[in-house]
Image (tube, rainbow, N blue to C red; front, top):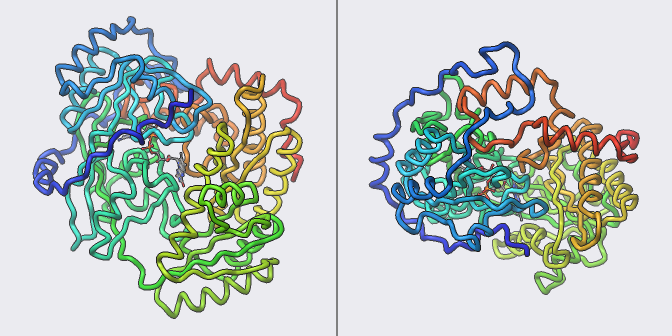
Length: 543
Ligand SMILES: Cc1cc2nc3c(=O)[nH]c(=O)nc-3n(C[C@H](O)[C@H](O)[C@H](O)COP(=O)(O)OP(=O)(O)OC[C@H]3O[C@@H](n4cnc5c(N)ncnc54)[C@H](O)[C@@H]3O)c2cc1C
């Protein structure tokens, strides 16, 4: 049964502009005491292990007693303990692996989150923060028994401060609601993951999410000014200061992208941008992926910085046309490239001319231009619904997320095609081409015996390919539990050990999202063995 991601289906509460909460918020914005590194077993006894610290033996958790205490903290509807309801939280957007949590809670306020974390701290209960559950790296799941703290009832806009171009929201606020709240005044929030109509700002912060417009405007970390955070011992603190630049150690930056391992963000102040004066979108179609990738290279070489530059291959084009019930993209194309240009009118006109020329030089058959808001939205709708469209045709897919330098795109696209053939598994490609951020979707039938291992082996080869090309094992979907065993492909033991020290400074007991991001000896020992037994891990040879 495909139950996830489920939280998107939870009825959305309308975000009220609760400016009065700004006062409540400001009274909480006092630095908390517990960021000084406490002596952890690792620091006390010498060099730390680069893998996740083996959890100290804890007495078994009495979940019935924990449920009773959670009920004392939260309103009745804030505790989910019925088996059939817990199933909705057994995975995130990565549906390959599932773990049913023992208990889920739905706090509504910072104080309730703090009370829950104090309870966890006192009783030694691990916890997992969860937003909308659209993550693609198994980050918001309780792989070992843990209290899942979902923010789906924390959906208030707390303050809109247009003169200073800022907005403060609770973490469960949906990404696209932020722009909706300020669009009438000519502002918008730039980071726009393709999941933006359902993913939460808290999840975006934890994953440092990107999106179509991050090529020009930067990812989430470039747009978060300040955060109210509840630390794993229940302390409420503030990271950042609401200003663009301040002189202290950037703990705000440390928290962003930490995948729920340092605490729970309970209020987030975001930077707003003025909507550009002029916007145009180009759609160019090609007879090969390599040609489309050449166009990406040509456009950037011409000195143009598009707001977004996205690519889709034939499998995606067919699925999207079918999903939209229209031939929105040329049906016989091997690849399409969408290029958005924005800025002042004259600037956009010059960039349009240059980008069109570069697309044609790379072999584009046609270049279509959309200037009107409605036409642009239609072109983007196809791109943004590509994964759902593929999901309708191929109910089981495994979406990878790797990065390569833009200049390596043509070779890497060819190599992914070869790997797909070698493994006998179709791979669809829809991705942020301007950032070199690949999203190969491995399509499979879940009822085929042994397919899970084959899918994972192919995904691992694609990541090796990315590293061999000078890239990374993750661009924006995070590491979670899915890629923790690949961390040592990129980082030396000392790097991982240093990251662990930072984590332990926030969370000496290791209660926050245990087992995520860092390799654990148990799970990665096994998977490392499995990987070395497979004959075909030589993606590096493709270069
Ligand atoms: C169809 C589809 C398209 C996508 N497109 C993109 C894309 O273009 N760009 C992109 O970057 N991602 C994309 N994603 C991935 C995903 O949507 C993002 O990672 C998103 O930020 C996750 O948000 P969420 O609310 O669903 O978080 P969840 O999945 O619930 O959680 C993700 C992580 O955040 C932690 N977390 C959640 N809330 C908090 C909090 N308040 N405090 C601390 N930690 C917290 C969790 O513990 C977990 O580790 C896509 C996913 C899907 C399904």
